[in-house]
Image (tube, rainbow, N blue to C red; front, side, top):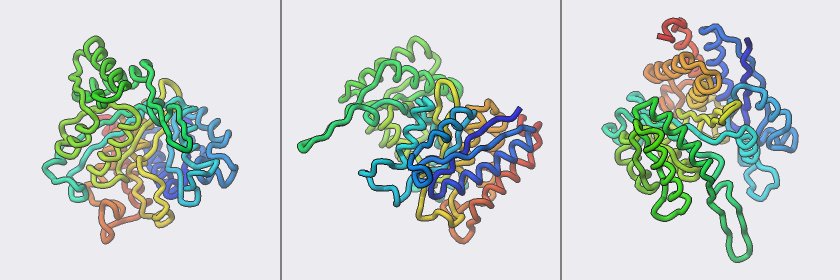
Length: 361
């Protein structure tokens, strides 16, 4: 049976990294005997240019009919006017809303081959393996907004249901990993955070007594991410805090181009994308790091298609490629660097050396 995957290359380097991820997904299909059907859609700046809309109806229809959506990136300087009535990021926000994705998963793990690219000292990097769970539908980004000549306001609002569902996912993921969950808030100041902490405490006590729960204020968590990132396992937090902390954590690995993300709904297709932007300054040069997008495709295999062994095989193939020193300039340096497509080919080849039986083992 064919499995439909929607590809939204988007803007800037998006088309290059999505094409690279498709090379790897084709190798997965061949190695494991699957039939993937890929259909492209427009979103972001390229959609505005073609249709006048950041998220055309045809793209949304495609995404809703798919089992998973792989996105490149949106935006660019030609669409950067904040006063413009239609902007690329509106397409992404509308897509998240339409898919009902409420939790953004961002894994951050270090690898010895990339220690030299990280701004942190090597002894702080060993064994770092963090999974961030960021709430996506509430908080200050979606609260009521007001502006007049004398001031402005953005309301931070959360319902009990929104908090419970993202915390429950965080607890469940922690239970499958090392049994540790850090809930990040600002409960010494914010009423929404006091509600968040109250719910987290109750759920930990009544529903997940086997998970070790700790609370951390967001400013302390930001400091500890640099001082001792190994202390964290699963971190769950609200929208804006998660946005900031995951960008901070991204530099730990040595390159933002290495990091994937998954945005999950309670039902229906998930949305998968690298955490980097469209990087228009390097678009078309063939030097964009595709690993974040390839690893996002692995998360799609795991969370939307239920193909855990295939996802693990892709992740291992990326690791094998990194160990061999094959990479774009951001991780390999300009003298040793290869192109975006050469990295994809190397990952696909590493995957192809594994029979399905070996990958499953």
